[in-house]
Structure formats: C-alpha cells, structure tokens
Image (cartoon, rainbow, N blue to C red; front, side, top):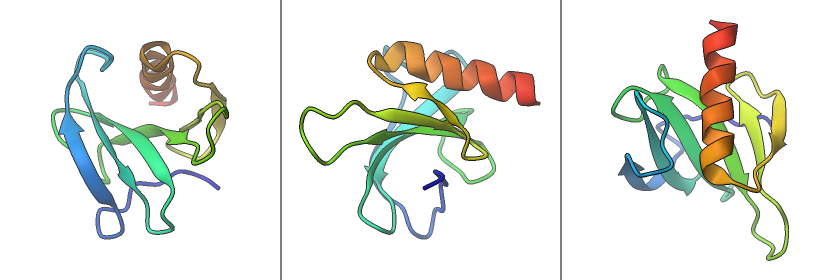
Length: 97
C-alpha cells in the first residue's frame, strides 16, 4: 500500500523535530485512515499534504522490520535505523525534485 499523507484521514499523535529528523524537515507519528501506524516525513516545519516527503510504516506485529516508502509510493528499504532511513527519504525526495 503506497503511503500517503491525507490530512483529513490522518490521526496525528505527535509532530515536530527530534534528533532523528533530517535538517529542514519535520516528522509526524500517527495512524492513517485504515488504522496503520506511520512515521511521516515532511519538508519544512509542519505536516501538510504538499510538504509530504515519504513515510516509514510501523508494523503492528512485534518483530517485523518497518518499511519505508517515498512520496510516490516506491519502496525505499527496510528501516532498521530510523535516523538513516529518514535521511534516505529526504535525499531521495531531493533527487526526484
């Protein structure tokens, strides 16, 4: 399922910047309209559909590794290290323009 950030459907539990957030970006944690857990990455200081860069799906089942997807839904990789994966998403978005 491609990640999207639809503000009307998202249940954002927290948003802001932390030590794992790439410079010039912000993150939000929450659930999509289907109840899936996501860590969304945005360009700039606040979540918006327009600023959406990509997302890391947080598995509901323990022991599974989170998977990351770019803004167009393309698989970016498995997120064993959140900081590294967020940096990868930011870099990919820059390359895609």
